[in-house]
Length: 228
Image (tube, rainbow, N blue to C red; front, side, top):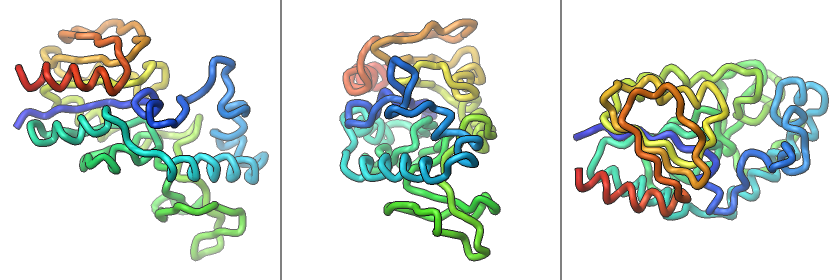
């Protein structure tokens, strides 16, 4: 079975009602990114950070996958599908996808501020008095700006193995995620789905740009792939 590796970004979840990473003014839900998504912000005002992610978590529990998520899950009947997502939501899993690698963490998980391997599933509000068994505070299981991306090596390995590589709903502005496609074999076809696709420079691969939303583009791509 051919290996289909898919990199997804905020655009694929936008149709489900989850806002893309930040607004045109550079703010995320009215906050400077560094206030709510950086170790500095956490140290400065942990209550603000916890409140921010508690609100995001509540929103996530109210939304559902869209056609783009479901088509990716359906393609697993025809390909060995592996999804690398920049998103912290669980919509790929809710749609039925099994092999999902979260580059930037997961909103429905928390972890110890001391032991990064101490990770818990979490759907309720996270409060400052919630701690690990040793008394260290819990924090959102999110990769913040300035932090390492632990899953990047696994993502690169997947890209190197891909027979087809798909990019859906990402501006290709956030690294190291934006560079993953460059690890594919030069003969691997790359499909890029986005209503406002970014320039893809220095990519030797066969490239097809599908300037559509995630749902529309995935419907087109599904037919392309099944007819190859």
